Length: 200
Image 1 (tube, rainbow, N blue to C red):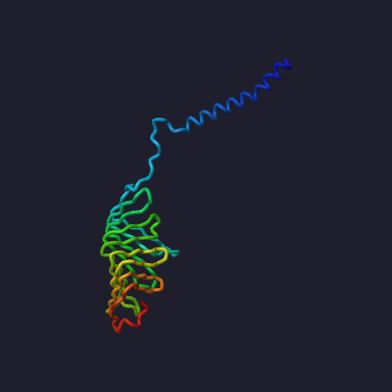
Image 2 (cartoon, rainbow, N blue to C red):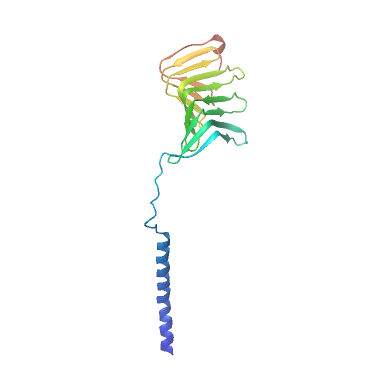
């Protein structure tokens, strides 16, 4: 009787190990890809969704619109999360300051909407503000750095501020916070007397 009890108790660990081994084998078989299943497809630069009359806004801490990106058509790509835009416009809103709008015939935006590139007849328009005339800049490319509130280009640019007109051969940097414009390369133009006292 004692011998039989000893045998049963000594078999319990063996049975537990056998059950555990069987469960492990079953688990491996359950998660292992089947031979006829295709391997995961690598991401390619192909559209995975699109939108018409696309609009996205970024709000400040008070809930007011700080930036708005719109486009007639948007195509998103799965591999890099970038999107192509048709007729894009980026608008920057700052309390007490004129609205700044940057547009192009086509553009791209990165996955987190922090960099917007505008191409083909790209234009920046800033409405007139107190003591500050309206401003317009034209180029073939503008890059909007949303987080830095900066618009720049490496291409030739034509700038009009009020009645003053200037051109630059190697680009421009416009800081929307400080309202400072830097022109690069060979810079030419005429500054109207009425515009010489403004901040930018």
